[in-house]
Image (tube, rainbow, N blue to C red; front, side):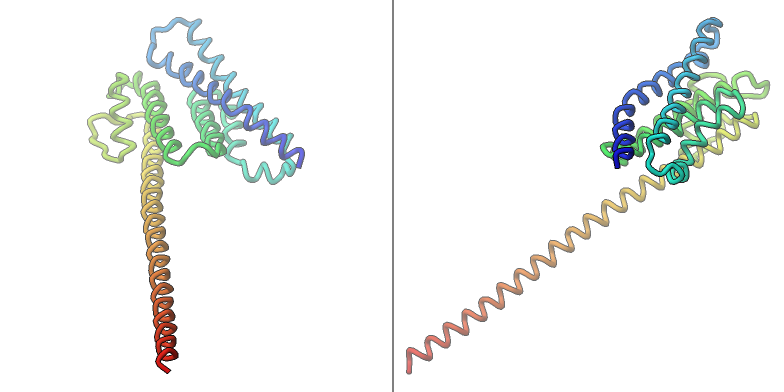
Length: 244
């Protein structure tokens, strides 16, 4: 129990610092893409920040594992965290660090009880649009046949891809860009499903509350009717007694 409480205390204390580091990662990831003419020193600093943030999340996973009461259960229930931590080690690509950081941030957000579903979905949409735009721009900008050359093109492409509209005026031409497109489309469909399910659950809960309230009022009316009948019977009995 002490180990479990220590794990919960660690998660509560590190939640905000890790989100702050995630914001620093977002800036470090975006600067070299938005400013391709940035100096080598700036690019190296941004790369160092990305690795530091990933290292912080990796350390967080190790500490949580050490504090867990049942470590095997922790590994089984947090396999996505472990995969996100190991992902950048398989191949030193900035895109893998991006994916892993998004996964880790999402996992920590789901553990925060004060964050409602709508807030999480909204944050996920903004994050996917932003990072999807930056990722596809970094991949497609230097492609000989690419047609996504500016940040505006990338953002427009991300919007049309996530909403599965697909106008076709901008589309990835590289294999990695198409993989990003598949990921954005699947994410958009999943988020739309979550929003739809959330709205449907809200309506159902409202209908159930109304139904419960209606049944309560009906039961109250029935009990009142029975009480009136009983009182009428008692009054009639009293009148009969007085006549005699």
